Image (cartoon, rainbow, N blue to C red; front, top):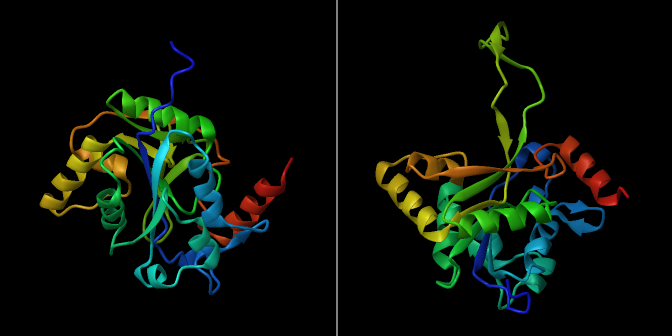
Length: 234
């Protein structure tokens, strides 16, 4: 290996921040909430902006915010980062970001704008898997006991948790694999909870990357409290 060789800058990042985040509460969308003095979305952006292998970053925001984004987000835009209007669904928002990436981005990472602490080893691991022609998702094994219940809250049984994982982002893909999966699912009129599911439905191979619970997605007020603690913890 030639350690003096320049690193490839072939990675495009799509950060999805087009949702309303109503479960957090308040008048400010959760992606713009402040965590220990820094906007949540900006925390999600920073690890990718500073990565030497990232060529371009697309931040997908609500259409109304594209015309008048927060000042700190305007300051973050430039040659390597641009804003794109989101769609009616998550899949549509990712597709909009994918269409805006330069052709040189042959590896694509898709990240939730509500995850402020993407682990560096997960970012690097996803890039490596995608360059090898496969897709990768960060994950943590389920630790809680799972119960299945009816609409009235009556427990119907216990679900074995062996082999079950909680999936996170950033998810990594060869660009052609992700584009093909999006095109196929659009033709079939289907939706999915994440991009890895689109690839799975298209017959693609998806690998798990060990991750950490610190890579949380802010969804509730309690998550904001935990995120603030993580941002200030030694």
